[in-house]
Image (cartoon, rainbow, N blue to C red):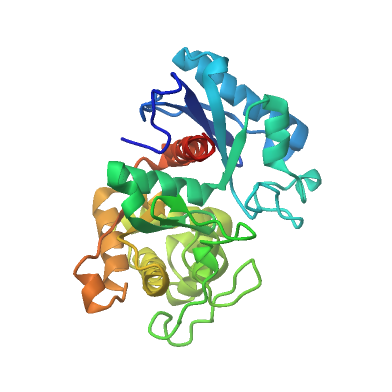
Length: 348
């Protein structure tokens, strides 16, 4: 796979990509010829809930671990790509109000990119995790032609992340908030059942995509409603957090209530893509998240439902491709490494 920065003119070099999460860091190494030197998860505890000092040390340890694993000298690392869950600015300053994965009070307004770079002594390039996964998906799909194409990605997890890639470059925006597909307000007519309350989001909006298409949306909005329609369902006896996490397993088995929940999620993503079609007109729409790890029959049904509810103009529909983000467990780290290589190509 060709990536930005591929060259031999300046000698052999690598970038390291680090995907930082609430539980673990995952790392990878990308060489100057566009080859990933790691083909599996390389994880260490992220320690983010213990505050910045321990978490930054854990990021440095993750870099060292992948270099030892691949036998690459530290001096060969030209840049490190870092991604974290948002919200954060375009340069990696975490939101002052904090975030789900950064619950320690010291994280509010913390410059995670800058602190990591200072400890590491190597340039660090920042993206949020959804943007990094989107960038990786784009380069896997288009390879050498990546700079000639555009894509939009929706990553379904605890929230609904998004990434917009135009001509091979992630669109981050002035404040780093571009591509926040989860907070698009979407039409609820024809999506909600009669009498179903308009869903609310943690961000304060009502009726945005994340209020449906996310684990939080299941727990907060979808499951409580559908249990009123299926009061004798087995999930009614579980605590709501445990029940929400179990819904996908029931859907894979063809459970009627669980499939209704995921049908509404897929419809919401289709409506997000319908909006995206109007302002980016991408070549491809990617869907990522836990659905990728699901049984193939369920995954295919979910993707088909997203496609069914993506409204495009005739000319767009002729070119339409709705597909899955590849290698999701490694997509963030790999996308971060690609972003670092792109920075090298720009900076020289």
